[in-house]
Length: 530
Image (cartoon, rainbow, N blue to C red; front, side, top):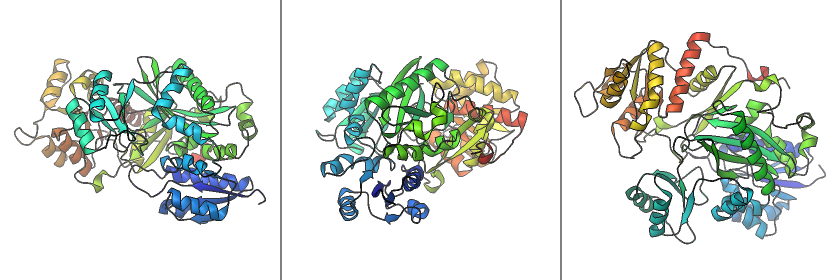
């Protein structure tokens, strides 16, 4: 060995809102460190990680990721340093306390991590770099929260600081909901402030995974979310490469990513979340660590980002690790690297545990609820989406009846979707408002009763097997309405359903492509020969 020991901190116990994607990153870190001649020691209390790395790492400590246990292991093993950036938010919280105890944190410094995590310090950095953020504020009392939300304007996204998996994060539409949230979900105080952001309605959200060595920045991929902004990135279907944005927007996103990486002096992995609205690019947040999307990106572009980042952490330069990438003029393999293997669409879809929780509303929001993810790859966007849906257990219909009921703001956008479904031979069922809206625009539909009206109502029809796909967007309020029972019936009877317009458009595209071209399935190894 000869180079000493390095400790990797894992993601902690498995739970909803904590994906096993971090286990993937930790195992790749172990492999990379061993290749570089280090003794790799894993600390984690996650059975999933143990099942993959108990004989992968040189030593495994099955212990909680808390300061007391970690410091005991460090004092016993005396490592060269500790890696905190591959286990998500849980080990990241230990960076500053460990450094204060004299422990060397490898990779991005705890100071840079704190700048990214601390709302006020991060805002100062964004202003200094000349970038944009959604208008935001910090509240340390109930009264301050009301004033801040009213100043920004509803709807607003509210959350406590340092959250995990979007936990306790909520989109609120008025002061009554804000007060309910404060009383139900969080304790607001001087040392536990509430973060309040303007919600960018109808924005396109992007995720970017990058690796930086302090000098060079490798933009692994720009992922376009298929769901609208406001859905937790861990719950949103995403597409590589972006499929609706201009080259100019993508170039700006890459440049912004480079600026942030260099300003934060990132060494290793970094994830940036952007929102694009009316041609303007906004920074939502920066995570100077591995993200849930690292395995997906790595498989989509053919470069193991976590492994590359691990080598950067122990001092190697990106130019030495990837000379074939950095010898070209623009080092961005997912978007500019001129190689036919990056011409395919890769779509990530998520898997939810709705069937295990009978009373839970299967509606996506800012709090993460997924428990896994799958991906589909194809030259055709629609077929990639079809494969991803099928892998997640949702087989899109080729004929039959589609139930459509959407919020007023979504009615204009659903017209083209309904028209295309009719052209494909589907029958449209709709409740009163949507039915009337479609009829007025020359699109035939059959009116279906609401739950409060005569039977058979819409839920009866779902249970009777008369509905084969559902498009149902929420009105925004959180009350348990007809929509809740429709979504629950869809889950119980395994009927594909979509709660955003963008996802519904993608589903129609997938049905059309599948019908026109059929399916061609190949192993991923055929895409990447090396």
